[in-house]
Image 1 (tube, protein in one colour):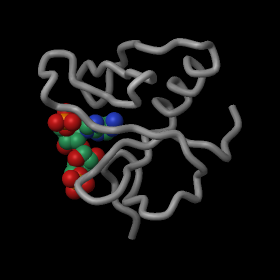
Image 2: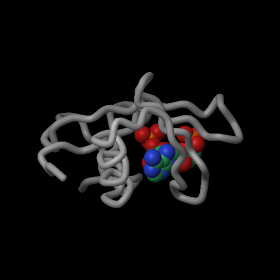
Image 3: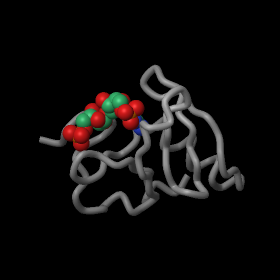
Length: 86
Ligand code: V3L
């Protein structure tokens, strides 16, 4: 896992980094060529769609967020998985 790159999901204004375990899981599946798969994140099943670069809650498709793969130094990152950077 090239940790210069991380996975991020859209917040209110800016981006949140995925928690390490989830980020590594998405990266592994991305490297494996998988396009659409489900992950349990913070107690909910989300569909990760790497074709459209979104995550969407499986039982409520209106809960949709953009996602991106970018350098860990991406500006405007709010924190990790809801935990704000000081
Ligand atoms: N990892 C962790 N928590 C998540 C994720 C994820 N990939 N996706 C959703 N949640 P929804 P601001 C986010 C949380 O999409 O101030 C942030 O992490 C989500 O948390 O409707 O708007 C912050 O904690 C939300 O609490 O399923 O930028 C919080 O929003 C809940 O699941 C506020 O961020 C429902 O999200």
